[in-house]
Structures are given as structure tokens and as C-alpha cells.
Amino acid sequence: MIITLKAFATLQKYMPEHADAYEVPEGTTVQELLDRLGLSDDQVRLVFINGAHVSLQAVIAEGDRLGLFPAVGGG
Image (cartoon, rainbow, N blue to C red; front, side):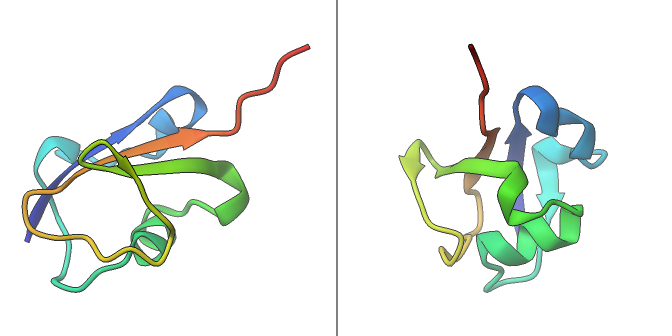
């Protein structure tokens, strides 16, 4: 199935080629996608599917738009 993948800030370097039409197997969870991209749980602070905040156990569906956001530091 085809999804759209967006990563922000420090996570952009993990984006695969053709992230706007990225193919994943049916039934893939967010956690499985992160593993596939080489991202650890502590690198990703927020995950959105179609604008809604989801857990790492959320199952991705055909046509979903995923947004991955890192923890943001400041001071």
C-alpha cells in the first residue's frame, strides 16, 4: 500500500526516496515503520496520521499521511 511520509527537523535525514509515495506492507504499524526507517523510539516524540496524534501501535492504512516529529529542546 502507498502512504505519504513527512519527517520534520532532525528526522528529515531519515526520509526515504519517494517519501511522498512510500510503499509499506498492509498491516504495518507505526513502530514497524520506524524500525524500517532506522529510527529508535526515543528519536520520535510525536506521530500523526492524517492530522491525528497516534501511538506507535497504530496500524497504517492505504493513503495515510504520516508526520514524524522529534523531541524539541530549548533553553
